Amino acid sequence: IHDFRADQKPLFQKVKSQIESIERYQEENRGLDSMQLEREISMLSRTISRLSEKFEQFRTLLFESESAGIPIKAMYLNAGGFGETSIDSKSELLSLDFEEAKEFEKEFKLFKSYQKRFADSFWAERISFSGVEPRHYSRISELIQSLENYKIPSYAASWN
Image 1 (spheres, rainbow, N blue to C red):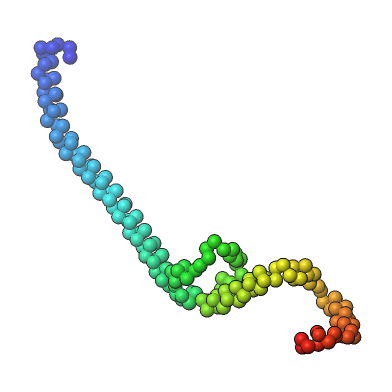
Image 2 (image 1 turned 180 degrees about the horizontal axis):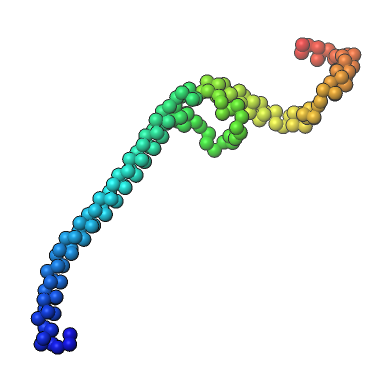
C-alpha cells in the first residue's frame, strides 16, 4: 500500500472478496476430498473383493477330497503326534491316497516297535550287508553250504 487513504478502498475490496471466497474454496476442496475418498473406497473395495476370492479358494481347497481321498481338514484333524519325528522326503509317500497312507502308518509303527524292542540286542552290533554286491553272492552261497555240514544240536532241532 503506497497511499493509505487512496489504496484503502481497493484493499478492503480484496479482503472482502477473499473472505467471501473462503466458503466457495472450502466447498471446492470438500468436493476434491470426497472424490479422493471415493477413489480410496473403490480401491479398498477391489482389494476386499480380491482377498475374498482368494479366501474362497482356500475354503474350497480345505474341503476338497479328490487328490488325497479325504479333505485336508480331515487329515489335519486326524493327524497326531506333532512333536514326533516325521519323514521329510519327496518320495512315493506324497502320492499315497488316504487308505495307502493309513496302511503305511500301521506298518511303520510295527517297524518302529521292532526297532525299539531289538535296539539293545544282537541286532545293534550286526554287520551291515549294505555293501554286498552281486560279485559276493557266490562266496555267501559257499558259506551257507558249508554251514549245512555242521551237526545241529538236539535242542536247536526242536525249534524247527
